[in-house]
Image 1 (cartoon, rainbow, N blue to C red):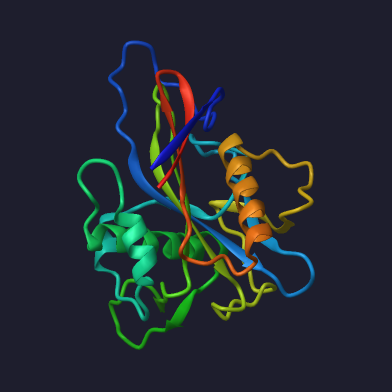
Image 2: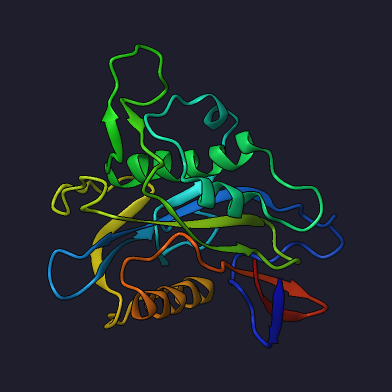
Length: 238
């Protein structure tokens, strides 16, 4: 692992009340659906509802926290072994296969709940948890970021990416929800003037760099990890 320090903040959520106990980050997952049907590469983003306590009115990728039920979701295709191993490679106690897989399943569940996009196959099993079987095989692990200390809500978020054509996703078939509004396909090289969290802008910059290096986004790549240490924004490569 290599690290470099920067000044700045990973995100700007609501601050924690003075004197309250530190908040432990909760597992979360986010996904960048990439449309490369023409010369541009576009990514799906939407505006978080104004009623949200965490990052209201900001444009983000679909995503949310990992739920206990994500461990029990049936799926059609498993993570690529390289992606699974990369997800498990963390400082301290490594993730289990089940927890790493649940993070990827959380990303696809949230994508369906927030944007109506299904990455997977129709489910014929009653009680499967979703109306489709998520397919994890084409996911790339792109980044990890932890909300800085001092905020009322903190998340340890893993960012995934998937190409729409590889996942048989129709770019025209997206549905707004109470979670994400004004869904848009954003040109990754020509961002419109939207309110985007700093960490999201950073992840987008990493995405642009990765696409320039190899448009196929190979799974065998270093994954940037963003967190705060002693008041400084740190970028570590996993």
